[in-house]
Length: 415
Image (cartoon, rainbow, N blue to C red; front, side, top):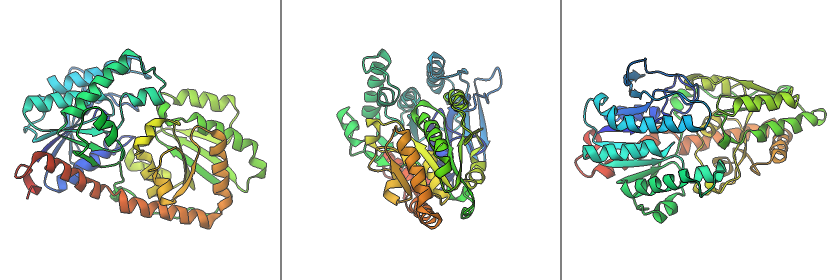
């Protein structure tokens, strides 16, 4: 197959952030397929541009994977500038991208970190006369109303609802990262029988051998990921304040770390300074290929999320699989029955949105003892290997595409 993946935020391992589509593309290439990833030329996390001035796009190979970076305008925060960036990307998918593809794709996959790019991918597929596969990453506009607090009556929500219905009804197949989204798809006119679950996962070839953390005097708890509104990181800052006040009675010195960047980071750093938090450190993001050496410095991880009905569809936090692959326990604040930490026993699940619950979770992890923590970490690692190995996920992704194309149209693996 010639496969076109459209995801404005797709990244390579030398960039900080998730590399789902890079890993899928590399695995699919090893299966005999050709993959092109269309992404924005403006990096959402680092706020840097990769398309030289005067060029509408640039095609490049990153570790054997073809990327087409489309020029999009820079922005800061989550306001009108970001919306303009999204719309510019969608326009370029239709007007610029076809000139950089080379071979005509057999199938177009449109991912939905924002719906405008996915909609543009749908229209491009129809223009080329090839099947369209929708990848549901985020559920729009529910992500806005449940997590961002936008009114359901806001005009943007109305527009996104129309796009959501268009995508569900127009997709020849749906790949979803969320295991329980079929009901919403059906309610909005999509075919719940044409859905394949392919969650985020881990490219275990990138992960160094797991080294057990030492039972030292300092206990390091780390978060590594985006610093955005949906990550609810105020919970971690407030939990750090609670733990600092309780430090004299804790069995170890706590070193709490938050790695990454995002629109909320400057405000979070200012809050930590105002609270006088000596136990909480902020560090810059690192490229994906370097993140595992950083994660190996941790004894445990912590993850927070908003207490939102959105998670009834499931979660697929990229960072979570990285944490679990390191063989360390994680304390996660989320309300979700398919939470991998809960299912694996690879840590503790606490009440979302509660700094008190998060602080108590860290205390419980400390009280569990070194041996118990090692056992939790081993369960997490084993669960990732069994369920979220990117090689197996790529096979499921391939099967979904081949099913969409039908017999005899899939190229190398169609037989």
